Image 1 (cartoon, one colour):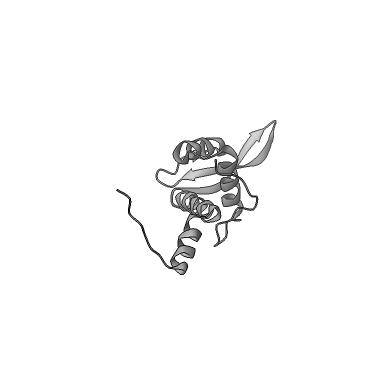
Image 2 (image 1 turned 135 degrees about the vertical axis):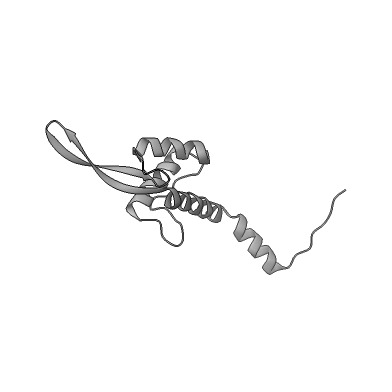
Length: 113
């Protein structure tokens, strides 16, 4: 049995906006950013290589204050959200550098899948 739904033109525009790719893209960026904000803190850790100390970006897990590498965070985010590798990397990079604004657009357009 089929049912027809009658909506106004303004309702159609709202639905179209909600379902548009940019909105879906922004929603996923927001979800990932909120997850990162709640669970991780970017930190600078100094690593000794060849007798010199170099700054290396690490991430503190807020739950237990354990330090993890960018690769570990990246692999977990891939597992958790199941999106493309390039999209996940760009979200993490923009989150660390503070480039995700109120519009939740990335500094570089990358496909989610």
